[in-house]
Image (cartoon, rainbow, N blue to C red; front, side, top):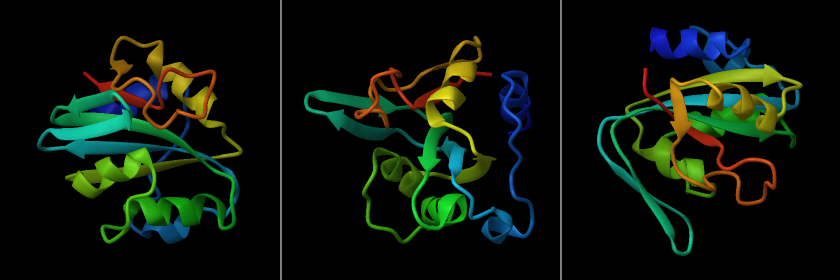
Length: 147
């Protein structure tokens, strides 16, 4: 986990986990976020027909945005809940995750967040189109950490 957070920092992203107070310390501001997600077993995901991918165990980083009511706190609270009805691509991962760490970025933009780490050799596109089916700039909003 430390290696992953260090590599995110080297990519120029200044985001920190909320700490022991958890989600209540996350601001209600609009912005973007990273979810560091550890899978302990393979997870099959369908991005769009016919695109399906099998994600192997390891660490993944998902970049998302929270511009609706409640901002970052509401969105990240939902992602961290175990008892949720899947709605977004990332829900398939968060429901199967062994560990999830939320990294909020107030006033951040998800496409800018994913652009920095994807340039580094420690990260690779995990699944084409994942979390970015409505995005014309990004190949994916999900990266695999290989460090």
